[in-house]
Amino acid sequence: MKKIFIILFTLLFTNTIQSQISTEHQLKQANKAAVTWFNNLNIQYTNSKGETCNNYPQAYSDLSYEIKNRFDSLDWVLGVEQMMISFGDFAGRKEVSRQFRSNWEGTDFAGRLPDGYYAIFQYESKYKNTINHSEQLILHQDHRSKWRILDFSYDFSEGTDFKD
Image 1 (cartoon, rainbow, N blue to C red):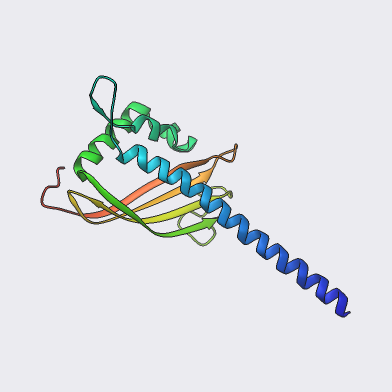
Image 2: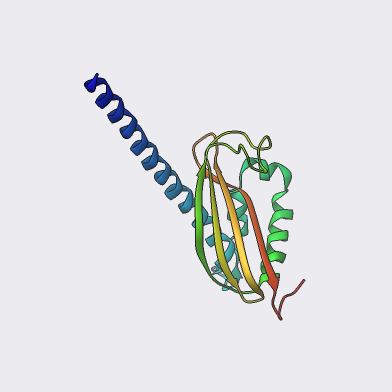
């Protein structure tokens, strides 16, 4: 009886540790995708002609298929460009929290999103034209286990230089 208890306890403990490692690994992979997406959103570069450009089309390509089916790429890029002009120059972002989910039971998303792997990141961000700017990014794994952006939401107060 003692041996059975020890074996069951060991199996349960090992399974819990592996699950925790897997969750941390998934969040680490999702974070890489989130950082890349935000870099495409916030960092400008100079092309070979000396023109300052953004990388919004690449940010669009990292969106989930669900989002791409709802928005034309040109409309999305134009909307993001206007949003970023309103926000003003990007001055930094700090991750506040991260969470891994495999279902949405008990949340507002229950029944609207299928079970799968999801990562939710909360940030405090700084832009020239906004105050108390917070952002949330929800990512999910597609059918090829690639993390993609499912939702980007934000909340802020308008600063004195905010442009509507």
